[in-house]
Image (cartoon, rainbow over all chains, first blue to last red; front, side, top):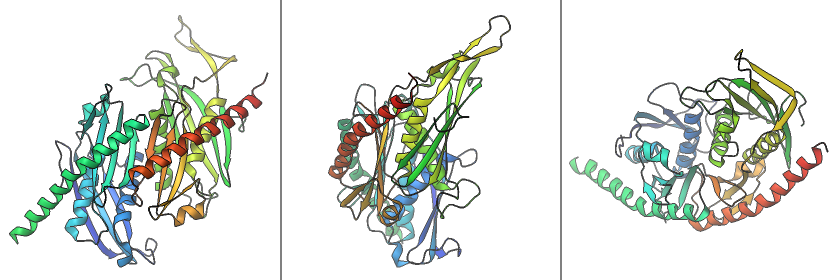
Length: 190
Length: 237
């Protein structure tokens, strides 16, 4: 469960387990992501987010080590106060870490909001997201801070996008340190 | 347009990928919280005839994700401002149903859908609607038709990524299947980014992303010229 500010997402990872014959892939694990909103049934927006999360996770999970299996990632939104997609990304990565699945790299989600006056806000609240000219969400990999996933809302200039990307890459350091601390805390008791 | 019964339509072929977009305009009451805004409802369909991987039945993930992407492009680029679709504040507004149907899937669905949508919207002719003050009913004047006000012209450029280094523009279905990732960049005529859509896949450095964006901006100019040429050729003089 990850909660930056008031946004809270619960992630559950199941697998690698047996896959249905219709879904199994002969050479790698089949990943399925289910995103459940807080209220209502999952709609087109959830489907598109599921696709983003699934392809991001597929890029990092070493699926070839577990062929013909299924890995299921279920995300439940507990509360949404802005930056929901990056919260889901962080929850997904921590769930992958916790399950001990083999990964090529860690990733973290960072949301940048471009204010009308040009300043960049990280992890905006819902209100800041609405007022912003553009909101950009990046998934940054821990190896060389490369971009795994990018999605934008609203329009911005190319320079502004580059600035947001650079800011997100710097912010990623803080998040990766948080991952390290959480994992250290979890395994130091036992 | 290509569909005579639609208010606006366009057929786009990008290599073998064939996408047709039909726009139907209907009248509706605007939403309570945005009384001066109309609606634009895009819907992307991938019927089973376009490729054997698509089965008939409810829309799959790819169709839904594409529909969401098109809705985001319309919203981000502000190509049609919803306020322009309002006829009478709080009472009547236009609803534009944009149906994008893929007839032949050979990769690069998003680019083709965006072009088809843009061309179809440029083709739309809306009849003049007035509200009769006394009766309060709407009167549609089919003889007087106006084109839609399209403020921006977004163009999508997709790249397939292979092993973090190689980038191929406008991938075919075979290239997409073998690729380790895809990036779609949507730019408008001012060189502004309307959307950077990279749904996972292998990681890219910031420099490579910048390279993609520069190529997307160059491609925008060529595509815009082509669309303008076609629209001019079909406009009755």
